[in-house]
Length: 294
Image (cartoon, rainbow, N blue to C red):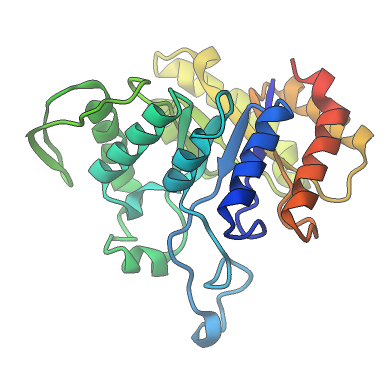
């Protein structure tokens, strides 16, 4: 099992030197990937009393493609993972171009996690339809893979028309691996049928308890679609929280026994007050679990 980190989007600040130092520290510590969440705009909640604790205009988000292209210049091994990119609120062909460029600049180190998202305010701001996003994402994935593997694409779908056009340059990986996030049954069915992997964010004891069954069922569904279940990646996120190093080690053993391929360690929302605190936490975690991951 390989271990990566969740980039602390809301807590690391806008300084580009800090972003460089963070990416280099992650690679130097031997982590396998950097995963970044995606939001484009945040809602002003002053007139939305029912918004709750979800991301708002106060929450900072670096744009994943731009940031990964920047980080690629300062690293050579660590992979870059979107977890997840809210695909239906973006233009598909532009995503294909941006992802291809990151893959080129990183020499084939991009993994594209995609999902539907929940923020209708964001969809509206980006001019996309929130209500048909589940149906559109399947065609979007088809378009992405065609553009990444065919020099000239002639495509007519329900939501896309490409009239004999193609990307240039093409990505290093043809195609770039795509995995999907989410826990609902339609998402799991879709992932088993068309994705290269699955990235659930597991919160709470009930979700964790059901995870082994979900993983086993998903791999069986992948097999049922005539695909190789061993090639289907399972990525799961675990948190820093208040756990002690021996508990981190137990978590690694637990997830490995479940059949998880990639574990993503998150320091977000842990009360860490500056970028150095996040890097120090990653160092302590790697010291505790590094020998258990290979």
